[in-house]
Image 1: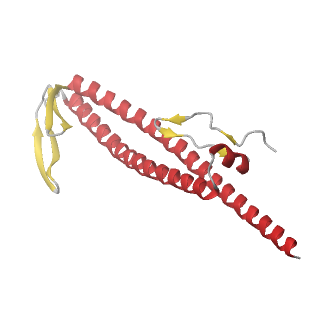
Image 2: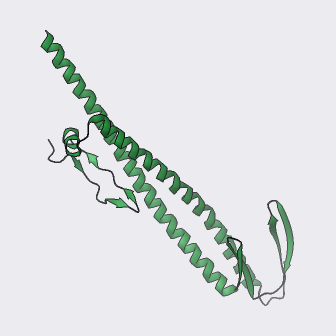
Image 3: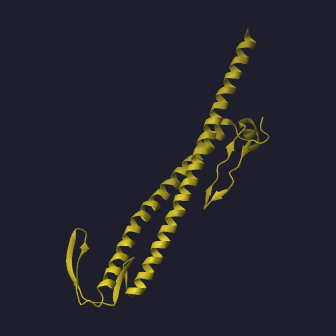
Length: 190
């Protein structure tokens, strides 16, 4: 028999996501927490639902970042193309989206600055070098954020698995205890 009812994860939480404990001995776990089987199952089901909500939020953030990274890379390519065309006297012909589904063609002469859309109805003019460094920084930050997000999702999936296993162990322990009580009751009657 184990000396401890549960072993905690090596990390108590990760960025606000509480770590789940693996229950080695259900009876000791229930006596330490002071819960009956139904209360423990309800608590764990609620925790599982909380994990699911957090997972949905993290997946939405992941989708946003995965869409943002190619956009930043495209902007970097455009600025690099403008830099390459500098001094050649050759104009750059570009199609750009004016509105959803409406495009216009532009002739871009040799220019020393670019305008970057920052969001929230804000557009700022930068020199090509400033724009390149800003976009590089934004790309690095987005990739780092995506790595952290993937690690958070993995941690969260581990906690979901641990919680599901704990729920199954408690439920199976309860079924086993009820069968033992039934067997004791039938043997006492005979």
